[in-house]
Length: 412
Image (cartoon, rainbow, N blue to C red; front, side, top):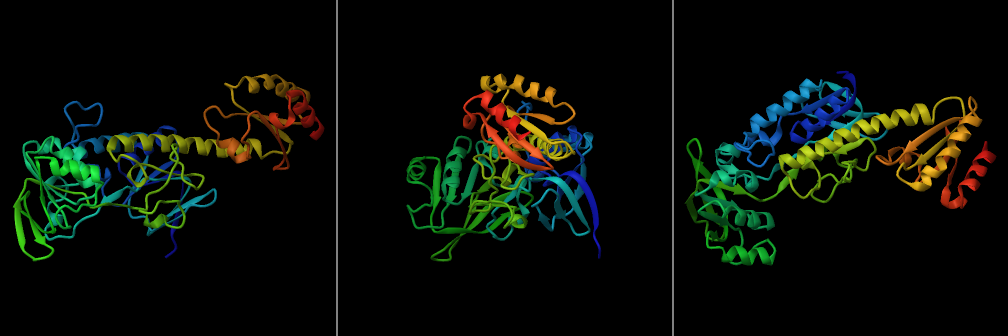
């Protein structure tokens, strides 16, 4: 079956908080934008019954309600939505391709906001109680809802023990299931010592979850002793799983730079190692995974997409295109050295009017065009002829602006 081909300015993979925010920014910038989500628009946040730490909602909000607002706002700005699975991507080159079962979407920019999923135990009944029915993965999100209750934590790594201690600020008791012998944990020694001294924390050693039980909501966890096979039923109000998180990055393998667990590596501008490809939200290698931080990532990625596309057009049409030879003055408007050279560049532009194309590139807000030109020193002047960079002259190499302008004149 021959696939259809559709063109967009931006394709966003993933419809959680990060992807929706990126969509809002791209749509508002009047970029033709497509957001692809394979299951539920809103992502994992939609499974959170109550969000109390998202700014602007003093009475709290449901995850589903908050994400519905994000969704409506993105649609208001013209973002198109497709509920389908991405089968593959081709991210190199100026035109990126996002492949689905029936259609290949071509784009100038791809934003990866595919998020991830918590690692599950695989125990019986687990799927019946996920998220708002008793099994949770985020202490920061759901701690307050467990005030005065009995909670179980599965795991003994840094996240499990540190989040377990945080939960003791709200719960009456936090029971920790640890797969190792008594006194052995996977967390750091400081956290281990603090946890063992915490009067609200109780440990059940050499155990793994065998079954999650309850009616409409979780009421208990059956643990199995790894040495004796004894089954221990523990009544609890909620259970938190801290046994790892799996980023949804399988289709980006061998193309995008990732760390060992598979999280996408970006800089502070959400740029990946491939020009025109950004990443935002929980799919990134980052310190804190929350709706608020996903929104920040998405805003930066959306803004970065707009800048990248605008700079691509300037670079292709204005800088490298056209019949006239040209010079590009790469400068920083806040630099006295750069400002001092500006009148000489403008005089050159006037002298060779109709014979020379002069472009001024200010790197104050973005160094994207400077990077494309290979310029690291500011001010610099790049001489371009027939769509090729002939020479790059920087102030430091030329000692003074007079020498720099003389060398440019010599090239012309």
